Amino acid sequence: MEILKGMGLLLFTLGLFSLFSFKAPKGSKAMSGLANAAVATFLVEAIHKYISGNFLGFTFLGKVGSVSGSMGGVAAAILVPISMGVNPIYAVVAGVALGGYGILPGFIAGYIIGLIAPIFDKKLPEGLNTIIGALLIAPLARFIAMGIDPVVNATLVNIGQMISIAAQQSPLIMGFLLGGIMKVVCTSPLSSMAVTAMLGLQGLAMGIAGIACVGGSFTNGIIFKRLKLGDKSNIIAVMLEPLTQAPIVTKNPIPIYGSNILGGGLAGLSAAYFNIINNAPGTASPIPGLLAPFGFNDPKKVLIAVIFAIIGGTIGGLVGSVVFKDFAKKDYKSDKILVNGINKSNNDINNIGSKTPTEIATDTADTNVDSLNAKSNTESNAF
Image (tube, rainbow, N blue to C red; front, side, top):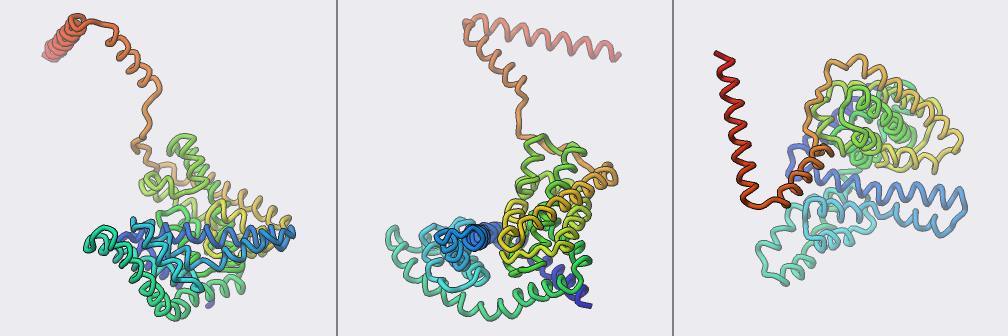
């Protein structure tokens, strides 16, 4: 029952996030800002507080991580409006006013400020807009965070806790289901870092999500390689950060997402079996998902879990490349220009530069005559 409740709430939440990301004004940019805020705070906290500080004994770095982790609301209220194109002064004013609040109130306050801040630039004269805007935005941002904080704790955070409880009660089943779903989210235009940050996922559930993104990156690499979805640069990019290859992913959803469910699910099983804990919300991405667990688990156990996750992701990629090979669309337009074409163009330019205007005109006339002769020959052959 807990599994059904946890997965049902997760799918419902993902649906809401998808609507917000694709339909809300500048929703996708706001989610991108939230993901960046999660990396700037939670990832730094996970590495420096728990690894550099607690594990290695560097007190200074431990303090850096602790302070960074407490600034989630500030970072979100700054980076979300900046991602939406707001004047950085307004964004920083909103952010510094949110000291003491978490990343979710910071996200919501930052999003609202991101929508209304441009009005100050339009309605107020130059110079005066900065002063009045700063004086009004600071209390407004904190008022929004103060009002939204209880609502967030009663909804999104509660959903995240229920998912975590389900993962604890049925780790292997949730490992496969949660791992598969989160890897699909990780590869889709909807940021998995933003989703897990908004849900406040921690513990085993966050460990499953992070390790699934690590193992699933090999699924994506194999799918891109075997189905010829791009060149080597595309393969490397999709393994490191899937969002960079969104045009190819959205054109080939069936083979990529279908393989991600299997590869991410198998990788999630590895995290569940070895009980990988991750108390850094928002680190569901290949690189953060690889680094963060070292702050909360025995490094040897993490390495073993990652190895098996890579094996699971590889299996998912190999199986998916066979099952979904007929679904691949390789007709995407590449932004690259062939090297031979560049060399030929350069040679033509150099040749033109060495000729007189009379010679250029003669060559052009000869080319036109050749084209007309070829056309007449083609028409006569047709008759």
